Amino acid sequence: MTHPVDVTDATFESNVLKADIPVLVDFWADWCAPCKMIAPIVEDLAEEYDGRVKFAKLDVDSNPQTAMNYGVRGIPTLLIFKGGSPVNQVVGAVPKSVLKGKLEESLA
Image 1 (spheres, rainbow, N blue to C red):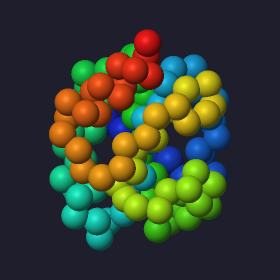
Image 2 (image 1 turned 90 degrees about the vertical axis):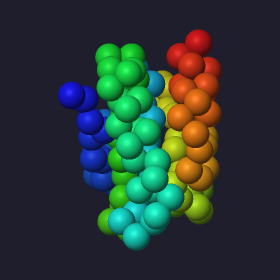
Image 3 (image 1 turned 135 degrees about the horizontal axis):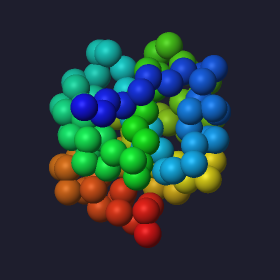
């Protein structure tokens, strides 16, 4: 089973910006209830898009620098990176269909 990888301020560049496929990064925190609601959806999509999209989670409390760099103010925020740049963004706990649509746009 494919799970999102945990990334940090230190590993963000190598894991996300230098990835050869699009990467969905879930900016989350342990105390955030909507983050916990969206986590199983992200897990499902990681399985579904295995090999086509990489999935990563970044804890904003432990890694504030990366969250700040990308203007993440509310969580959960999901950013989709392609070629080292953010190409799509979803803020809040959204239905799976919404996330899937953003992923498809990013793969097109």
